[in-house]
Image 1 (cartoon, rainbow, N blue to C red):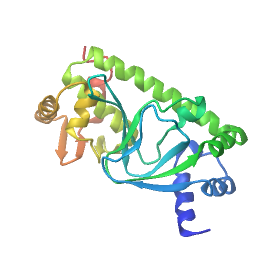
Image 2 (tube, rainbow, N blue to C red):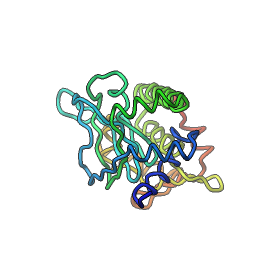
Image 3 (cartoon, rainbow, N blue to C red):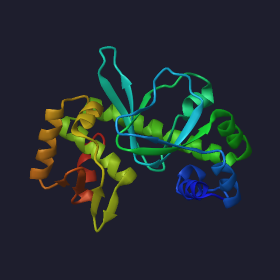
Image 4 (tube, helix red, strand yellow):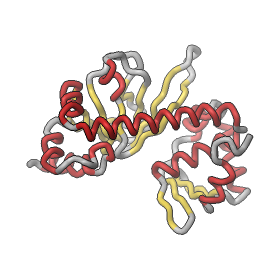
Length: 236
């Protein structure tokens, strides 16, 4: 096995979707993967295009977006190492449902449609894990709609920080560190507000000693109290 294949194997072992597969199955899967690299702000998938590949993030991060009729960007989700995207159009045969854009230099493993569907057929555990992840994403979408309609700007920002913390934060002694925070403009796009409002709300959370900031790193100082205060629907 080449160095590239060894790297792909180790990366796939870290993906929850494939966590129940044996090493020999993962080794076969690595032979189906093609490693692709994208620079910051490079478009990986375009909404309405026909899809023929499934993607797993090896390094970096992406944002999933749609454009409104007036050209404004609405951010649906942020995805990081170990996350996947591009599965919907492979399952239903329809066009891509959203754009996917690299937020930094990002490396992905791609698998073509026929290999992806064959993998689901041969390994039901992957299908079950995929359904579980899609259900979780649907729940998060419902929560996202709820906080957009029920929360004020501070609550919206806090809800996003909670989601990022729960998915990718590192927890030590009650503090949770989010190492890579999206830009203020990206946060504004997912909140449906302005960058200036995000800046004010971030400062407000700092003044109240809820968070500390260092460039793109944010630390939630008392995670349990923060979650109790700002969990979805609490800030009505």
